[in-house]
Structures are given as structure tokens and as C-alpha cells.
Image (cartoon, rainbow, N blue to C red; front, side, top):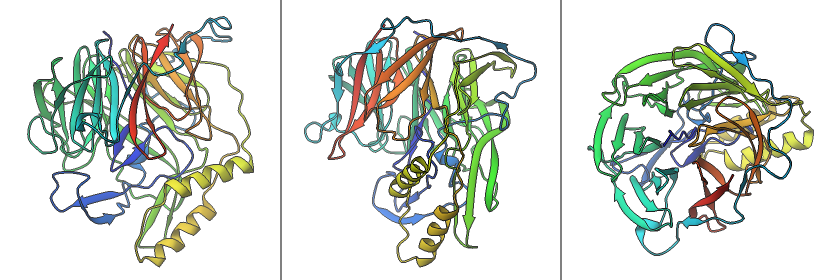
Length: 440
């Protein structure tokens, strides 16, 4: 079975990925015991230099207009129209074939911040639960089979599960706080646990696993942010899953268009509303690199050389004041950081939103995933992240196949050969993993 790649992460209870609407703040929660990231909170702090770094949906390109960092020109795949005829494309089944997650009942079915969920070897559903520090295995019918790990710092334990993925029939787990990758055998037993060779106490996020089995990590963005608008870059590191050694670096490449406001003591950094960001996806053949506009990706080999560029026709759509207000309103509801008894923060926050710039056109897409058969799925931009999704699908040669709709309220985590796996929350905020059949 081919590799599956998920370009998203979760840290500190804040979802990283799926939205390009503007501001996300970083909360670094420090626990008195460090055993569980979700144990009793003793202090809430703003980390001024990492505020935007951990909130990127794992995206990059090399500058505002050039999506690849390698030398040479890629072969351009022309896609004037989709290959699928009307009514003959892929679609999801009308309802989930499996739903995992309960508000009451067995602990193995109660979920607390799902970091990843995927189908492995066409026979298993594997879920990374950051709150419990566990990797849980289920049958394709949703029956719990086994649980691996717990909160802790030893081999087979996890301090903060930041990403899970599959390489062949093995599950690979990246622990953000421990700077450690864990490889689990098909039966869930520990194959190896390897510490990253160069963490230096810094937090690296995982952007996926490449076809050769190496892990792609994103270096922390620790440069002081200047006030006002700025375009920031970032560097990626390719790491061996055998011994944690650094195999190479990519970058610096574009992080995105950001905006910073400071009062001299506190600093807020967020995305320019509808501003351009880069996109990077770890794929079996190398890296897929692009930007959120236009609707195009470039395949770059591990050696840094661009191979081919593909996408579909796209016409920029002007953004309206209604859309600016909707984007900012959503960010104010979901991105506000509690600052107890801090009137200076309230003043800074009002100033930030009053001055936060916007772009006059909407992004083309927000992120991309590679399914178990090597097809590339690009999620089209939408104002409301909880609305139904539309994905443009391209085969492994870059040919535009057509579009697939995903249900409202479902955040897609991974796509296998025959299923789309996502996460939902109900009105009581109960988290569930849903598996929809993919009808080809």
C-alpha cells in the first residue's frame, strides 16, 4: 500500500490547518507536572516569537509568486477541463460507514483532541489521541482492537502527539514536545523510538513522511517579527526515521504574508486576511509545493529539482466587505487569547483588528492531501470552514480528474484508496472520527 500524508497538526488544543481567514494565536500552556499536556493549567503565556509559527497549516513556497525552490523549469501539465464526465466522477457515500467516538461508555471510544486518523493497510483505522497520549487501533467496522502508549516521556509514551501517518503498513508518530519519532509495527508493537538529533529544546512540527520513509519537519520561526505587514520565510528539515539524523534542509522558503502589532511588551502576529500563503505536501515522489493562489502545485524531487507543475483554470474572485467582516468576526470569536486582568492586552487586540490588512481577492485553495493511491486532493477555499467542502482531484501525473464534495462539519484528516476519514464535533463538543466510503 502507498504512503498516506496528512498536512496538519494540533498543539495545545488549537487546531492548526484548514483555515486561511486571518489570525490564530499561540497558547503555550505550562503544567506543573509536565506529564500531561492537558493536566491542570498553572500558567498561560504568549510566546511572542512562536505566535504564528505553530499556527501555519504547514504551508510554504519560495516567494510571493514563485512556488518552487529548485533550479530549472518543471514540465507544465495543461488541464483545460476535467477528465471525468458529468455525473461519472468519484463521490462519497451518503453516510459514514463507521463512526468512532462517544460521550459516555468505554474509555477507548472517548476521544480527546484527535491529531490524526487514517486507514492503514486497507484493514485498520488508526487514531492519534493527543489528550490521552495514545494511538488506538480499530477494525474497519469500528471495533476497538488495541491501544498503544500513554502520557509520559519514555519509549512508547507520548508527551504531545503532533502528527501520525503511515509508511507501508507501519504507523509513524511525531511527538512535538519530546522531539521523538516512534515507529509502530502492524500489530501496534514498538519497532523503534528515535529522538531528533537537533532539537535544542525547540518545537518542530511534522509536515509528513516522504516516499523514502524520511520525515519532513518544519523548523521554528524564531525571528523577531517587525511591526506592520511582512512576508516571512521558514526552513524545513528532512530527518531519517532510522536514527533521527538530519538528511538535508529545504529553504528558506515562504511562510506567508503576516501582520504584527506590538505595544512594547505584548506582541500579536497573525495572517493578513486572505493573504497569500505557501503550501507544502510530503508525497511519495517528493514535495508538492505551491501557494494558496493560483490553483497550482509543483512536484519537486527530494534533490530539489522541479519535476512537473499542474493545476486547473482559476479566475480570481474579488473579496467583499461582507467577506472581510465574516473572516475577522470568525477570528475574533475563535482566536482570542484570554489575558486575565490585563487591560493593555485588550487595547492591543482592538488596535490589531482595527489595522489588520486584507487582500482584494480570495485565495484559490487552502491545503492539499495525497491519498493512498497517489492522487492529489486540493481543498478549494471557503469562508466558513464548517461548510461543505469541494476538492479538486489530480492523478499522480498531474491530470485534473474532477471535483469531490465532502460533508459540512467534517474536517478531512486523510484519504485512503477507498475511504475519506474526518473528524466532527456535535453541539455538545463531543469529538468523533467518521469514515465515508469513497465511491470511484
